Amino acid sequence: MQPERRRAAILEAAVAEISERGFARTTSRHVAARAGVTHGLLHHYFPDHDSLLAAAFEKMALEEIDEANEALASDRDPLAQLREITEPYGPGGGEEAYRFWLEAWAEAFHSPKLQETSRRLSVAWHELVVGVIERGIVAGVFRCEHPHETAWMVVALSDAYALQTQIGSGLDPAEMNHVLWRLTERELGLDAGALARPAPGESRPAVPSTH
Image: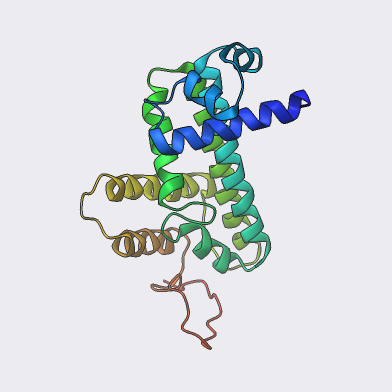
């Protein structure tokens, strides 16, 4: 097997092990056994366990971001794009993906490499949201003086609410989404309810609020 294919196979095995066991209980030996390589060969590609975990996290997160970008590219309407990325867990996500992120963040307290990877990926996700907001401003759909701050609000609230649902706090994803949309509408000068998904056959143009 070519080196790049071997490395990719090891990362696939790492993602699968982490999905089943969690970051804290996944070992390099687990991953090596799943990938069908020796422990020594695994460390030829990833010199230490933290490097392996960080690379697996980055692989999963970048695939999620790519999927989100594909979803956004299918509809260039800024309001539809904003709705897409602020629905529960967003495009490319889901409960499993959020659990991956949350566990990586928890493990990052003890791993500088995971911490650095997490920082870069969080910035990449933030920039994706900034792009949607800025396109909406140019189109005259949104009114926002601080797109970067508003994007962080959207990202931070989405993550905080997802954490609450993951730990069994009783927060319903639909309730989470309602609050996030209400605050986002205020930030972007939209009429209340503008982000609610239209009923089948209903057409509602995005018009900036006048108040």
